[in-house]
Length: 351
Ligand SMILES: Nc1ncnc2c1ncn2[C@@H]1O[C@H](COP(=O)(O)OP(=O)(O)O)[C@@H](O)[C@H]1O
Ligand code: SF4
Ligand SMILES: [Mg+2]
Image 1 (cartoon, protein in one colour):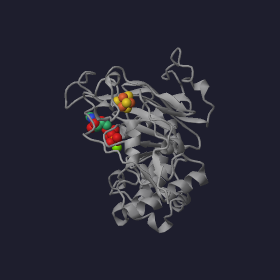
Image 2: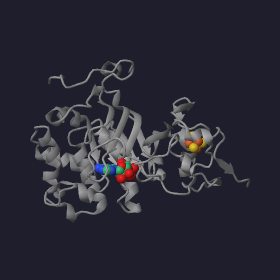
Image 3: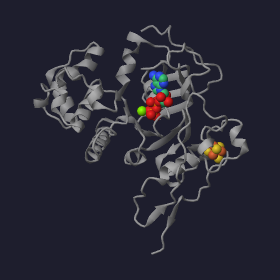
Image 4: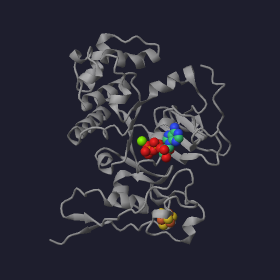
């Protein structure tokens, strides 16, 4: 394939070039990515746009499960769709498998689609009701110019805990959990390295959520998959994520190894989010921090720190310049002028 459409690495972007990532190692990299949407039919202008994603650097390496969390409207789905190249970024670069794919479109995206696939939030809406499961599973092969064998389709069904008899059935004949299994099977068809799962269990009954999360964990172990797991529910990601990125108003406000972020949230927003999640260890309670007010509109986000209108620690400096992600410890970073100290956010009840 000609690569004339692939942009050169920008000067000074030391880690940004194709050469910087060993194939198979760095699966996804977003650098300085922004996505602004025009408002209600008004021709696209940066002023007055919805800043759904507002300057994000994000990396996923082979073998990792990265949890992407944040309240509804924080830009998680937009980021997922940018990573999939389903949306064009307003600014910034998208690298998949070390290749700059920012400008690739149409047929040129085909090889990229083999590496990265998406599982959608609502399996009901993402499966064509007029297509049999067999046809649904054939689609990703055809997009690659491949005609799958029946045995391949059956193997896919087995991988997600379904069987041959399901091949001729239609989506409405399945439960919500089974439909999401079909969505996962479709995503696995072309043997991708990375699955971007956008709230894969939030449309499901709580009793079914754990089964689908267990399936994703099993597939990771069996197939060596990596995941971006989008969720607004931190308890869901806690079960499976190695690394966490916390989004607020289109930015990542904290990121790091999941254990570190859970044990020692540095950003006031993360601390507030986590304070609502029950701690699994008996006898340990977190101090509850109640977030007041709503997420501000991404059309006119606050100056400086996007969280300052709801932050219990905000000071004058927070309204000046947006804080950048700074090291808390090791790979753990937070974007806050007054990060919480490393004391655990939990208090032990004395027996
Ligand atoms: N196609 C679009 N046009 C205009 N605004 C959009 C579009 N898609 C998303 N948005 C807005 O961008 C913001 C982020 O949305 P989204 O990425 O769906 O967040 P999340 O997945 O975290 O709930 C929201 O304010 C949403 O209304
Ligand atoms: S920078 Fe200021 S407003 Fe933002 S989270 Fe930190 S303390 Fe709160
Ligand atoms: Mg979403």
